[in-house]
Length: 444
Image (cartoon, rainbow, N blue to C red):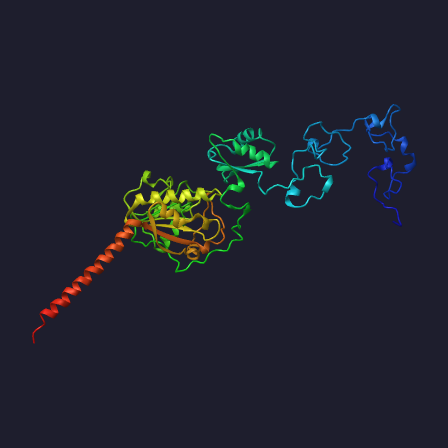
């Protein structure tokens, strides 16, 4: 700079820079800086320090201070002191932790990286622990899971999946540093937990992840969108969540208050719809398990049992298929002889992998109808989609959802037989009438 800066140097007379362009006190000379005592004194370990030190000071004999990163430091040539622990990143050959950046495709440290560069199968080091108690504290569960798995190797991370109320959702992810450690843990059976490799879950095909829900294109549903019931039907709604579907159907006039019931497994977070439905005279229950309707305090049989968007909250096809089979089998105990069961699902992955029709066939049901779900009309009247965490969410592809109706297979066969018998009887009567007319022609 052509002119001296008028800003005072923060080091003042202790400034040792020969080219410092800040303003210094009168009499300041960088050449005479060696007369100023070093603030570290005999503890200074810098061999190039220009300040004055005690006569007995030797920088080579001074131990450097502890590194603030400790054993986690991976800086090559760090001048600070580190603990002599086996986890210190000093030699990649002795380091057991794996470089996550190399796993993602690129490590900027290259050959100088202090972590292992191991090319292993994607997600081969990730285990899924299921059948966890949903009522326990997630922190206690995390400690219990870590205490069990740390004997097999270094555990990088544990993720206990929780809802917004901080309650465990029944499963967790255990991420090992090495896939071999995950294989050792998988070989040992736990008495209570269901432990599987993440790549073995049904959402994987040949080691690759299926298309995500955002990338999946919905299947086109043919037909006119409608609800599976009318005001005159006796209707049982299960899995209602925030009861906005029941309130909207009642507002539109498709749901009657007499002999109808809306239910959910847990009370909603917002009870505004529940209070309004109670004022309108609709019976509402908040402790009904959709897979155990026979044990519920329900009165009478129903014409239609409806379950919209069933989901266990787990990213597992088998668990959700078990939920569908449990509901469809349980719903038959609450149906009239010719009653119908209606299930609504989105037509995107992974819901298309649940094989809803096959689940119904496994419990003696047959599909009689399928049509689009009237999402647009319901949303305009106040319907909000609620997920397993019991709060409304903005969900994609809701307008492509499909409702499938089931009936008992034996009633469908009886109905077909009845139509066949009526047709044969009508043919026989017609033949007798024709014979009578030929034998006894009308007079005149």
